[in-house]
Amino acid sequence: MAEMPEEVVAALSDPESLKVVATISPTGVPNAAIVATVFPLDRKTIIFADLRLGKTRENLTQTKKFTVAVLRPNLEAYQVKATFGHFEERGAITNMIAERVFERSRLQPRGVVYGVVEEVYSASLGNPGTRLV
Amino acid sequence: MARLPEEVVEALESDERKCMLATVNEDGSLNLVPVGSIRAIGDEKLAYACCVDGRTTRNLKEGRKKVAIAIWKPRLEGFQVKGTLQEMHDSGELFDEFSSTVNPMMETMGIDCRVQHVAVIKVTEVYALTLAIAGERMA
Image 1: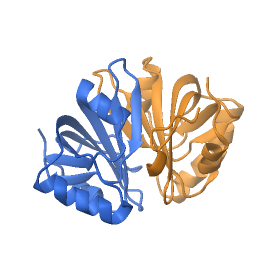
Image 2 (image 1 turned 30 degrees about the horizontal axis):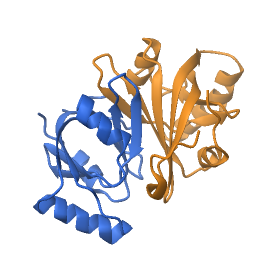
Image 3 (image 1 turned 30 degrees about the vertical axis):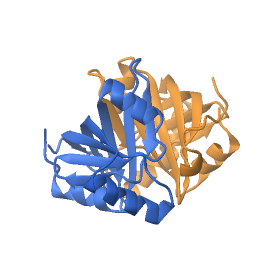
Image 4 (image 1 turned 180 degrees about the horizontal axis):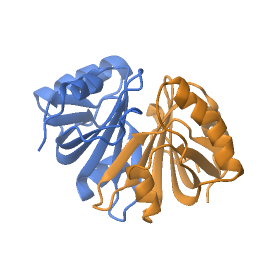
C-alpha cells in the first residue's frame, strides 16, 4: 500500500483531467478505457463508478491489477498502479458517487470499484517514469 | 488485422485529441502513459514517436508486443484501439517524418528529448469508448 502525493490527488480530483484505467486479461491482453469518474477517496484508495464497464470489470475480477493514468490540461501527468479491492453496489460512498454521476450524465452506475494504491509514477514529459511513491 | 474506422482516423487527426498507451510489464502489471504523437499510417496501422527509452519502449522491445490505446476527443468521443507492435524504426523515412515534427515541438516546450524510435502498431481490434456505446466493437 502507498500514499498518493498531494499533486496526484489534485490531478485525480480535477474534473478537466483525462483519466484512463488499464487492466489486463488472464491471457495478457491489455485493455484501456476512459473512466471520467475515477476519484481519490483518500491518499491510499482510488474509486470509480461502473457505468458501462465490460472488459475492465471482467479483468479486475480475474487478474486484480489495474493502472490509472491521469493527464491534466497543462500536460502534468501521473500513473498510479493499484490492486482491485472490492466492488460495492450499495453504501454511503456508492450513493454519493451515483448522485454525482447521475447529475452529470443521467446514467445510473451499477456500483463502485475500490482499488488500493501500490505505486505512483510521474508521466509528465519533463520527468517520465520517475517513481514518486 | 482490423481496419481503422473513419471516425477513429478523424479523431486522431484532431489537434485536441489525447491518447494513452497501455503496455504490459514483465510482472504482468500495466504501464499506461500519455502519448502525444500517435497517428494513423494507412487504415490498418498506427505509429507514434518514442522520445524516451522508458518502460513502454522496454516492454515492446522485450517482446511484450500487445498494446491498448485509449483515444479521447473532447468532449465526449472516445475509442480504444488494440494492437500489436509490428516494427520499431530507428532511421528511415517514417523516422525522419516523425522527427521533423516532434523534435521542434519538444524544443518549443523546453523539453530536452528527441525522437529515439518510431513504433508501428498493427491494429487488431477497435472499440467505442463514447459513454452511450462504450464497449461496442467497431472493427
